[in-house]
Amino acid sequence: MGEWFLVLAGGAVGAPARYLIGVAARDRLPASFHWGTFLANMAAALLLGFLVQAGTQGALGATGQALLSTGFCGALSTWSTFSKEVLALTDARRLARAGGYLLATVAFGLGLSFAGGALAQAIW
Image 1 (tube, rainbow, N blue to C red):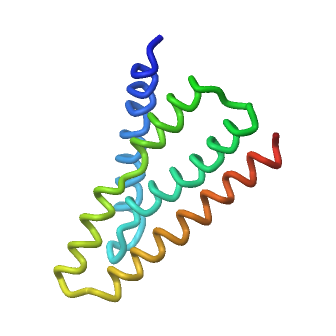
Image 2: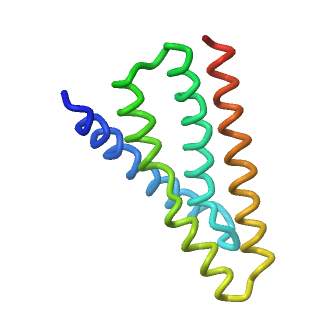
């Protein structure tokens, strides 16, 4: 099976997962924050950190990386929507909120990525 098909298959699951996270967040969390995008990106960061370290440890090969890292996590995370939301907050002159969203996404995303990697390293 071609690597491109694995990426496609992972993305076919990751994109609806992102959508469902967004719907769940919209229905359950305050609209004052972009929870759907934030939570999808944080889940992808944690999982990708885990998968990359699993690959480094030899527990996940190229096939799994294509399917899960590139396909699923690539479709689950969304830099473009995050950027659009930060720019919309900036355009609305909500600079503190834009800055907070930017900093929270980068800080928590990196932290969760490291945590995912540490978890995989502890397992393997």
